[in-house]
Structure formats: structure tokens, C-alpha cells
Image (cartoon, rainbow, N blue to C red):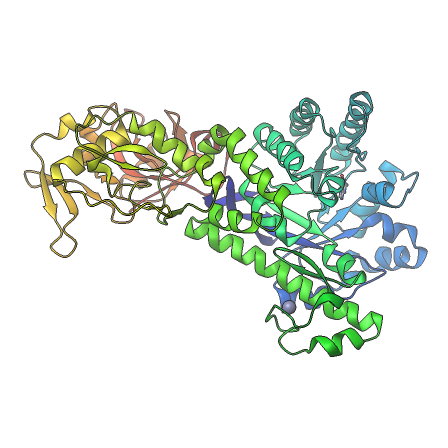
Amino acid sequence: MLEPVDRDAGGRICKWTVDKHIIHTPNIAIVINPNNMPVTPLELKKDFGAEIIITNSYIINKHEELKQQALKQGLHKFLNWSGPIYTDSGTFQMYSQGVKTIDPIGIVEFQKTIGSNIVTPVDVFTFPDDTAAVAKRKLNETVRRIMAARKSISDRYLVGPIQGGMYLDLRKAACKKVAKIQPDVFAIGGIVPLMESYRFDELAEIIITCKKNLPFTKPVHAFGAGHPMLFAFLTAIGCDLFDSAMYSLAAQRDGYLTTSGTIPLFDLQEFPCSCPVCSKADVIDIKKLPKPEREVFLAKHNLYVTFQEMRAIRTAIRGQWLWELVQERARAHPTLLEALHWTLARHAKWLLNLEWVSKRSALFWSGEESGHRPEILRALEWLKRVKSKRKFTKPPFGKIPVGLKSVYPFGQSIIPGVPEPKIKTTPKEIFSATVDYQFGNSTSKRFKDVRLEISRRTGRIRRVYKDNTLLGTIRPADGFFVPTIEGAKILKGKIKKVKITDPEVAGIVSRGGSVFVKFVKPLDVIFPGEEVSIVDKNNKIIGVGQTLLNSEEMKQLKRGVAIVRR
Ligand code: GUN
Ligand code: ZN
């Protein structure tokens, strides 16, 4: 079960329940290789805050001693980890180590027997240079194997790997076919070679194609990703879960991970990091360590960077500045920046469905790609709703009605070289422009004789009354009008609606209770962050609130809150 709790850009924060455990996504499952464990699962939990691990059932099954232990003790005892365990099937080893055959039924049964929480069928790894015919054959075989695995895996989570190679039409077909089988996680496969060769633009195209064709109800895992440099970008285009052996593979090659790339240990004169291991060590001493100890040191640093980045990403989502973080990270490599630029340019329309209509935090212009940000695109679209004689100019928006000077994103965008314009406006001008901007052309006419209460401290509109009835407030952070039920009545036909048909739930909601997605039916195309009215089965307005979910998500999701009340 997946419960979205927050979001930003094309990404989200969810609570993902696996058996009795809750995993906070975006998150990473650290790869445990039972043959080489520079850091133990116990340490991962204690020192790094890991919530889930992933191990390879093929490797365990291949080594007789490991196999016997895992069978005897069960996987959790065997790895000394009480949290959720994801097992991969060995598909990747067929690619990376030339393993020829894995019994697809046997290895699924083995995962089940040793007590894996999340079981992966043996998908058929597709290479970037596979022909369309080969990719199609592999995809169909993958689908057959997922189907077979679903029959035997009914009380565990099952992974639905998405193959299809570089062919976006095949990726789309894979998503449709795999979704029908109803796995519990979707995992986008065959992408490691793209990441290894810095083909980030093609990687993004594949992921976005999949995201467009997968339901919102299950986490999407980017198989084998990877490097902390990529996590922010991949989260912003909708990945919920990562897994990686990178921390250990890099350590084996004396690689020191940072969010802007990997540095060879022997190139370092000092540690540019203050994680618990780096802050206590001298680089000269570390270089002199015997290889196995050096590897442990580097694996730990690499893990600290990895988990720190996951926390930074979740923090950016909560602060609504994930794009800013992504733009910063994209400077790590020109091909990553290029991928970001093209992703924004090509997929702005898709991103608009996932993006907040307004944000608490300022939009920072930090390079050419900023011009393609979905927030700007929406602003340009919504500007057409507002008629005004008096305008000011602010790039990249062009001419803006003066009444919108403090409305998101016009007042909140920080564009280097563009001074804050000095504009005189009246509260009436501000209120009219704001209402038209949010609710459409000439909506403000309905609010002709309202009284605007001005804050003495800030000089800005605080509350909006008709006679003594409160119609709404102006939210200081984004300048948006937040209607009360009385305000929503005036906005009828203009304000978007959701319906709650269950009378008992409607009763709870009318008394201010939470609006759970399970009971909500959207009546319009709704974006995250819009002010909407909540109606009962007789279309009576029983509440107002700000949406956390878009209308498509409302239709699909079963868990969590759809609308935030105040
Ligand atoms: N690990 C990295 N890539 C893949 C993949 O395509 N399939 C599976 N099962 N595991 C992977
Ligand atoms: Zn460090």
C-alpha cells in the first residue's frame, strides 16, 4: 500500500507499507552481497537509517553454503535484518557476469521459501543496442514470467520489471501489460548501461514514458540507480525507489562518491565531507590502509553521502524547492544538465499535471533550463485569464497585471539582473487580478462589493468580507485567495469540485474532518494545490480545501488524504 503525503516537481513523498514495515519514499534499498559485506545490515540500520535492503537470490542460491544457511535460518536471520528485504532474481548477473541460465520458476520459489518480502521474477535484460525485434521478444518473455510468478506469489509483494530497451513504444506496451498483472512494485529495468555511459537524456525519456503509462498506486523503482548525483533528478521525474551497489562497487575501485560525481581517493588531498568517518580521518592515513580496510572506509563514506542525499531530497520536496536542488545537481555533468533541460522542455505538459499551482518557496532562476519550468509555463497560461490595463514587465513572464505583483510566481521569482519593480497598486486591483488568475476570466466581477481588510503590519490584504461574512483570506506566502465555504458559494461554477457521496463521510467532512482519497470523486480536472469545494451527493458545498493530489491520482489512490483542510 502506498500513501502519498507530500510532493514537488514530478516527485512525491509516500509512506509505503511492506508487511508490518513502513518505508518512507523516495528511498534507497542498499544492495547486500552476502559474499562481500563492507557494512553489515545491522550497521545500515543503526548508523545510516536504512529502511529496506535488497539482496540477490541468485547469488545466495548459487553458493551451496549460503543457500543452506538461508534455507535453514530464513533470509531475515541469515542477514540479521528485521526490516523488509527485497530480493532480485539474478537478471542483472546475466547481463553483467554473462550468467547463461537461471531457472525462472525455481528462483521465484527460492525467494519465497527463504522469506523475501519483495520477490522479483527473472525478467529478460534488454541491452540499449538490442533491435526492436529482440527487445519485443524479451519484453514478451518478461511479461510471461511476471504472470507466472504472480500465480505463485500471492501473499508477498511481487516486482513487475519493465523492459523494452530503447523503444519507447515497447516501454509503453510493457507498462500496460505489466500493470494488468498487478504487481506491487514497478521496476524499470535495463537502464544501468545508460547510466554507466552518461546517457541521461535517453534514461529520462524511458522513465517518463513509463511514468506516463503506470498507475500512481505503486512505487516505481529505478533498477540499479545508482549514483547520488542522479537521485534528485530521478525523483523529480517520478522515481520512488532506488537500489544500488554503487557504494560498494565504487569503494572496491577506490571511488569516493559525492553528489557531483566520483573522485578517485588517490586524487584527494583532504576529505571534502564531514560525515562521521571523514571527519575523524586523515586522507593520508586512509590512502595507506590495506585494501580491505580502505574499502570499508570508502563504503561507509559512500553510504553517508547516499543517505544524506535521500534526506536532502525529501527536505527539498517538503520545502517545495526540488527543482532548485535538481538544477544544482545537474551542474555535476553537462549531459545531466542537458537531460534536465530537454526533460523540462519536452515534458512540461506532463509535469504540469503533477506540479503545485503555487508554492511557498521562491522560484530561483538558475540557468537557461529555468525558462522551461512548469511553474512558468502555467503562469503564462493563466496570465491570459486576467484583463488589466496597468501592467509591469518582468522576464521571463513578459507583461504582468500590476495586481499580480505579489502572486506566485510573479512576486516570488528571483531572476538575476531583474530588479524588483516598484509598483503602486490598490487592494481592489490586487484582489480582482488574483481571483481572475486563479478562477478564470472575469470571476472577480462576482465580488464587486466586498470589503478588504488590510494588515496594518504588512499593508497587504488579509481577509475578504461581504458585510460581516468572511469570504476568504489571502495567503501571505503565495498571494493566493483562499475561499471559505461562503466564498466558494460565490465562486460556484468557477471553483473546481470534488464529491463525497457517502453521507456519513460527508457529515464528518462538513465538521472539518480529513478528506480521505478513498471517499473522494473529482468532478473536474484538478491540479495539486488548487483551492476546491467539496460537495455532498446533493451538490451542497460542505467544505473547502487545498488539493494534495491531482484528479487522476484521486481516481486511482486508496490511501491517504486528498485535500488539506485549514
Ligand atoms: N538490476 C539492474 N537492472 C536490472 C534489471 O533490468 N532487472 C533486474 N531484475 N535487476 C536489475
Ligand atoms: Zn564522508
